[in-house]
Image: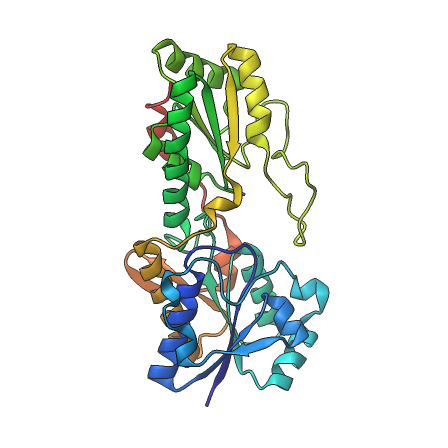
Length: 341
């Protein structure tokens, strides 16, 4: 019998539990595998903190948000190294790992795989910015959540004739801002891939206001305004050495109010986009990825990540999975910009 470990690392995301359920059911029903879950990501591996995952433990998981295993931003390369991970797995009798995570988690998985540790990756990020897969689970839910929140901002903005700014997540790419902004009828969408002078943003806002509208601006957290060389990150770095983003909306609130004279209010949606039950689309995608990850284990496809290409699930090397980010192309932004102002 093969004994597999499952971990969820990095930011949480709607659909993780559906991945866990799909992997466990596939492994038990098809291959007769045994599963354990490591609590709080790589920390659980290093600390040998695990929980058994029999079939009944995943009952009803696909509809639940968050992750029942917990997560953390522990970096196994910094906090223990490949030998610590290898020794832990040997002591626990775990034959391989299914690592569910984003860019940082998959980068760690690649280094561990290069060191001879058996790992299969499952892509997880609400930002939809991994180039090796067409769509990541959690993105659809995040866009739906952001759109519903922005719709609510529209009503209060219209009541007070204010300009409303909604800041959404998007560390490296503006996919959430683009989709939620288009869905909610934003008068301006600001993303990290496209520099826009604040004067132009002010003109879009003023144009909407002059037509009797309450201007709506949707901005990705990594948007870089004039005068800054990097995204606004007043909270320092995370455990992977990346800037902790958040707050650009508040900065824009002051700037746009000064430029237009229109009363402006900003709301940072933040972690609300990560929470709640996943949409039906995300449940299906996550379940399929979990099942495919275990099928990859059975086929000995270690050092790979499961990926959605069209409507099919395929395997790509972990190096390809993290080699390039999927950003919003210029033509997609210009398509949306026709509707601005």
